[in-house]
Length: 140
Ligand code: NI
Image (cartoon, helix red, strand yellow):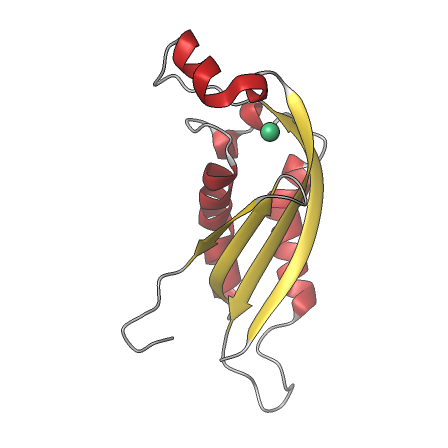
């Protein structure tokens, strides 16, 4: 199976704050990340598909780029993530960002023949989160 990955970046601010915890709980869980701060986020989107013998590829990487740019990168870049509709109701951790980004891009990618396999969200060069589609019964 072929996989194709496209890397994106955007610069955004956020703060970690959960309504499920009191002030002390938030401070204990998030520390300095409770304050508004920023990251140069790294986003990597990986898709798979059936290779078209005519073109030799299974998707046009520029289609992938345009979809992710329009739905995620442009709305997030130079914004305060906590205020964005796409992240309402969740704490803006890398885990939750990856989940919401998955929800936003899966359908438009699928409509262009791309099966979403993995979303990677990184806040720094030292840590990142990967959200992966569980393997199907047929191993794909
Ligand atoms: Ni942060």
